[in-house]
Length: 194
Ligand code: OGA
Ligand code: MN
Image 1: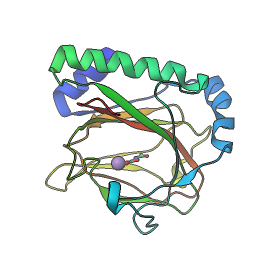
Image 2: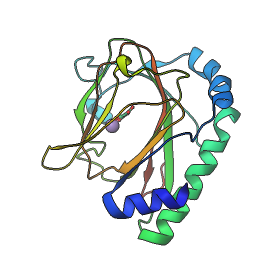
Image 3: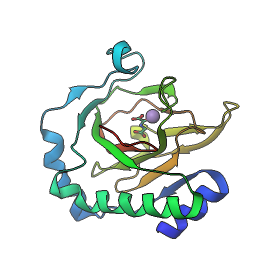
Image 4: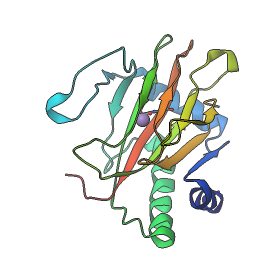
């Protein structure tokens, strides 16, 4: 799988992989999403605010040094990807940050870029979809655009699948969903996070 991701990133800058997390593990992850989450905000540092017209998800930031054991395997996979990307593309990736996210029915995340204007250290975006069921009628597709704002791909958040892309190159949006949409999302940075 790591080889396939590397090939995809080389050829087009993004990769979608299915069956990365098995059904049994998805089930064991469910209780993590029953804990306390905070409303996600938009903007960076001083300008942060809640704006449900832009994004309606709830997040729970995790300590990368001490992640819940249920996601250990994913954190190890990310570490391997980071090393592989550095060896193959010299991206100079250093640190990883991540959160759990849940989008209640009726929520979405309007088109945006994951790079803040004031901080360009987010290099690679990854998203693992962790709900146990998903039906195409639930919506919640991740839409990837190119820099000309043309749609490249609409990805249905299949349970246990993952998406990874170069943060700078792909504006994206999450379409409105009609069931709770759960993910483990984060970024690999080119600087050490404090
Ligand atoms: C994000 C984001 C996409 C997704 O959290 O910045 O764009 O598919 N998530 O959940
Ligand atoms: Mn995003």
